[in-house]
Image (cartoon, rainbow, N blue to C red; front, top):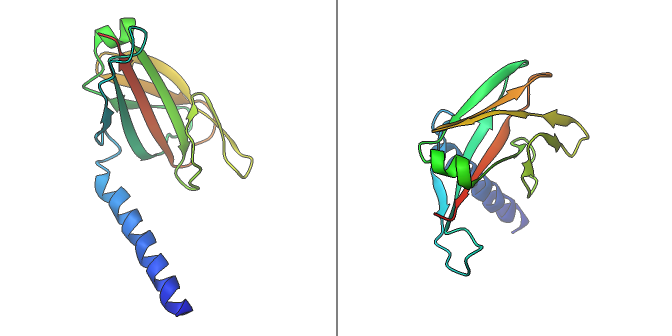
Length: 143
């Protein structure tokens, strides 16, 4: 019975990994995981959007651009645009806001926000090549 339990756990893990890989599209925009209408009060955003980019490696002293067709000038001017990241190698249950992420083994990864423009966000790594990282871009607007 114990051997069967391990096989089931392994199969579930492989199915989970296959699901994440299937969602990946060349480290580009991989889909909307939330456009949630909120009408609680005048101070709350009218919608929120989360965009995920998986297994992004940024070479030493290089930039990386996330293409986000939903990123408009109105969002840049009056909304909220935040970039979070975490390691793809170990699965911590949190994303940290750029620029610093500390991997559980103590290694520090620093990725700087270079620019926010209509349709794209560019980040840069000015130190060593990053390990594979997952990024989450949060957009919110009250318009």
